[in-house]
Image (cartoon, rainbow over all chains, first blue to last red; front, side):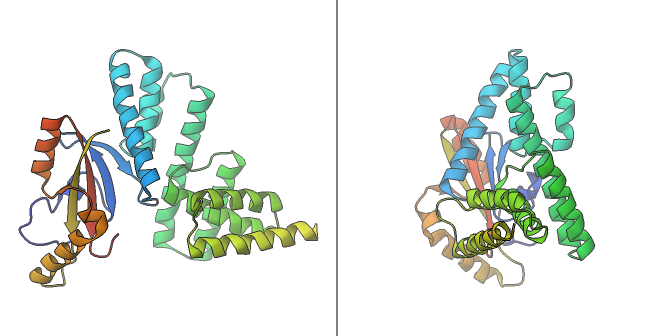
Length: 212
Length: 66
């Protein structure tokens, strides 16, 4: 990728491990990455939530460095949520730790996010029916385990695929859950496209429910 | 949380350098950029963060990206 020649910091995003535009990063004063904001939701609320999570990670770091074992677990989870610790490395960080139910849920969401991110890559390379079917099976398996992604872009993809599966399988429970998931992603002010999608799915859910 | 806002903008290669500069200037006029005090250099952002005990919020954009 080329940018304006001779401008400083042209490679900065890549040096910091970023690949996409837009990218939003929280850095310390030395330029170390503390957190990556998911560009799937650029609302002020979502940006503030990432900022709050970064602040929490700094507080947890102090506690963990002081020997607080519970803080060490929470720190690893938060760093993974902030995209500065790979999910594949999280297991090592949590080795030997007894997770609380809340921590288990958070790790489950991170597992789901890792899977959904992998499926994005699958979809980028191949959009044929075999790929779509594999993605649907992966998401249905996550759904069955109650592990749902937390990142906005992933949530939208995940619930949209499951909504499609709910319609195809005439599964009112699955479609209802997917509708709720998509409503949560759209928030209080859905875009025109989102509102249209939600209306259509609501109609399909009514049709499935009526047929039973 | 106190932060320094660092704005990093990249533009596609095919256009002439002058128009790239113009694109950047146009982008910096948009409300999201002009309504806050963004620092355009990383070294300056780090300097301000160190002096003020702040973190850096870095935004990377391109001509096609929001």
